Length: 357
Image (cartoon, rainbow, N blue to C red; front, side, top):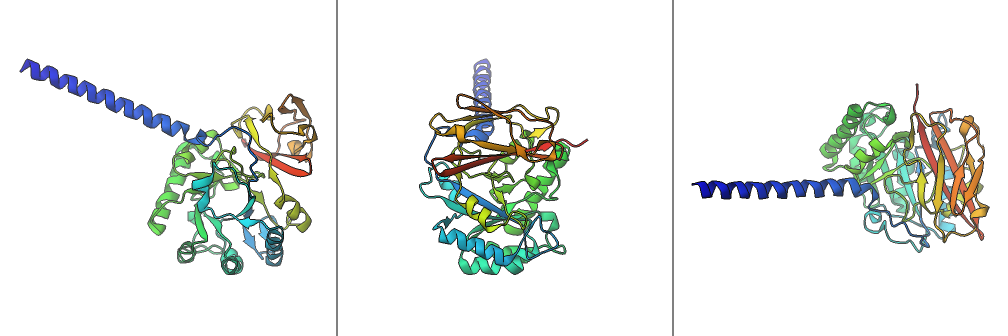
């Protein structure tokens, strides 16, 4: 009897050790998920340039609207430049692979009715793939698509649905429990209506903190912000850049310039935390790859003090530092940097969210 008891204790002890090891492995995998994409070596990646649209032919909202005739001209420019449109399904299988050909990714935020009525028939006819980011609380309300319309689109092989939270609130302003509740509510509604939760997420207003980002990594495979730039193999898959396109920034000459942009790759960017609660302005630095040439040609602009001006930059070897003149005053602060690399224009942007009193 004593021998059996001892053997049982040994078995239980071994089982407990095995379970503990399994939990540690799970935690390690979970914690490393946000960094697993980081190749961190320079590559000749032509990149994926993502465009962000909202409303179509809604003249009352110039900051989020694009005229349909202008949108068609933009698509024509892309085709004339011989760029192909990127199918979002390929992100999962080749995100880590160097792109030898630059492609264009179309994204649509908020699922406004004007998109369904005005732009969708054209995209369907042209067979242009895109991601439609949906905030679940608004669906079915005036000015927004309904679930029947979303299901109609979702059946098409060029349409991919993305999660845009439930309330489309300023997530950084929410208490942690309320933020988690918001995301979980959206996830449940997607599962109820589509049978699954999308793998793509878009931060409302492009705002997030490290805490928010960490939770998003556990629920999605990719997430997009609203900072400008070109996606490359070294970008964080949970901080993917997009160029916002609207009436204000929809000028065709500007559009053609940005469509030709290639990635400005970097090894590290600080601070990692994009939600500024105390250190405003932040101590900002970017470590570029040593293989990146012509760094002396870089130009950065930032909007501290709520005014866009050329940034005060200083280099230490391949590390760029920006000394901000004053605090960021609005709830979002931005930095955009461009580089003329022997006639190839490269670009990256950063957005900080500023804690509101």
